[in-house]
Image (cartoon, helix red, strand yellow):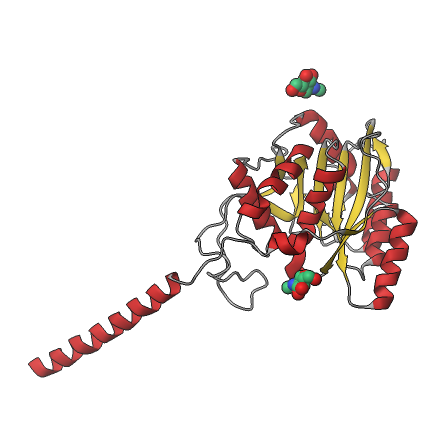
Amino acid sequence: MAYLYGRLICVFLSVLGALCLYFSMDYETPFKVTPVFSKRANGAFLQLPDTACERNAPFLVLLVTSAPQQAAARSAIRSTWGRERTVRGKRVRALFLLGATPSRDLARAVAREGQQHRDTVQKDFLDTYDNLTLKTMMGMEWVHRYCPQAAFAMKTDSDMFINVDYLVELLLKRNQTSRFFTGFLKMNEFPIRKKYNKWFVSKYEYPWDKYPPFCSGTGYVFSGDVASLVCGVAASVPFIRLEDVFVGLCLAELHIRPVPLHSEQTFFPEGLAFSTCRFRKVVACHFVKPQEMQMYWRALETSLGEECPGD
Ligand SMILES: *[C@@H]1O[C@H](CO)[C@@H](O)[C@H](O)[C@H]1NC(C)=O
Ligand SMILES: *[C@@H]1O[C@H](CO)[C@@H](O)[C@H](O)[C@H]1NC(C)=O
């Protein structure tokens, strides 16, 4: 009997030892704080839009990330919510953020499209999902270097519907023009450690157990000064592929806390079924196809004078 207990204790201790070794190795993975980011992202711009910000500062710049092959989405946005116009007396301008493509034909088409519309910000990094942080930081750098006069900027995607009128209305009402950051708040998020998940993050990439407060990358809005502030700290913040978390890390470094834009939900990163009255009080809605953008836009435009319940 004693012999058996001895064996059991021995096995138990071995397992414990192995576990200890495993966890200590796990926590000792080296962690590089020096980001690769600065090297790759500091390249020259391939395309710049023709916004004369010092002469005619926009109130709101919409920075729309899109992939080179998404010409249909860009076209739909240009003819709907991204149309250059004045909203409540405030100038709004939409710009597209693009990386580079290895396809020569596509690269040529993108260059032509950009020359025609003069609304493209492009740098020479490979346009992939994993390079989204570079793309976002390109947008921040553009505001910082070429358009610091913009009162506000929004970073969003090309599968989003943005109710620009309502956004401008809320920004004017709110009247917070510095150190302001808003969107769909994510105050208590944790890194996903399951491999093969789209948002998987290794302990090597991000060793901590919790993310700082950030806003869903589907659409966040900030006062113009935030772009310069973020650019200033980006090189001293650990690089992470998830662009919205990366911006959150920058905000934490700056002690800027994301705040809600309104007491009611106005950002819908999970999508929302369309109805005219509902969408009048929506700022951003995800999962909208180019044809739907046209439909939503027309419905909102043609119903402008009509009453909605609760108005
Ligand atoms: C990001 O862009 C760089 C520069 O073009 C490229 O070398 C790298 O492979 C890209 N990364 C990913 C994950 O696509
Ligand atoms: C906005 O705030 C500024 C000062 O921060 C103030 O001078 C201005 O009157 C405010 N405007 C509105 C519309 O509340």
